[in-house]
Length: 369
Ligand code: DP6
Image (cartoon, rainbow, N blue to C red):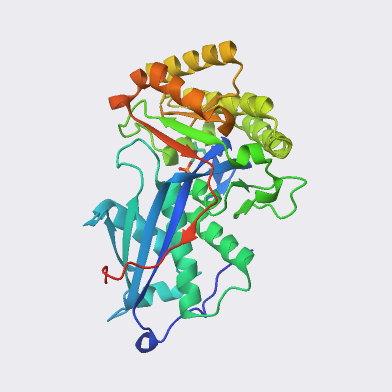
């Protein structure tokens, strides 16, 4: 599929300044995307639950550009202040989209973005941030040109654009769960965008919790981008990609049946496999910390004692996500407070749960271009 469209240009004088706003959540991968090829295409399929509280709120302001230059004219404000680093990353992303959206060169853009979770919480914001921006861009296309034929086409295009910004972001445009990558038995699935799987999720998983234990809030020593790159030389890569594809199919079946035990087994093995891939890269590296392992050991002991289906997963970092059904939420909250906060930086954790996906918001009238 290609969205390339040289005809999408505007007559600058005819553009009335405006703004669009979306709130988009983060997501937690159950089967992990780790390794890519071509232009941001995944080496294997992945599946995630969409979160609720951890989200990015983005407003995209646009007006005609006085003189159309070669690149894109954009400034990004993060929590009200110009952020040079994010502006640069966003400019590169938008310039990469010029074959799809040539009109981006003809506008002056200002992006106002805020995260619901504290900055430097050790929570990756690229999934929520890139998906919120991609949704604003598709809304901008609709504001300047024709509406897309239907909601499916709208979200598919947003997912495609989000993927070009950050792979995992393409899964955030759907709640409560999404699959990215080609999966046999899921004919609409694709490497180029994620698909929503709301109608294949057992109710027990639709109200699942994800409590994120902030073991460390420092910057990662190796970025995800670099980590994906190291998979190219990893001797275990071919076996890993085959395993992840197989596990994606398995996880889809588990999510449909509501099997919380099998869910936990695949979930935990995926987390440890991800970190084993980092440890077996050249150069090798570790992102987990001693407290990550303390939390995991205490959790496993708690599970043996209580038989509660509460399981862990990890992203590319030391923080531990605890996933569990709503029915045991009170017990698990007490367990975290009594036994796990001690391992978290400043005793911090974020209580989140599975959410319904992004939504468009009214633009705050006080914030102009
Ligand atoms: C471990 O999506 O952050 O969270 O495509 O380079 O932006 P880029 O990488 P990114 O990688 C996420 C990796 C992961 C697993 C996952 O979310 O599937």
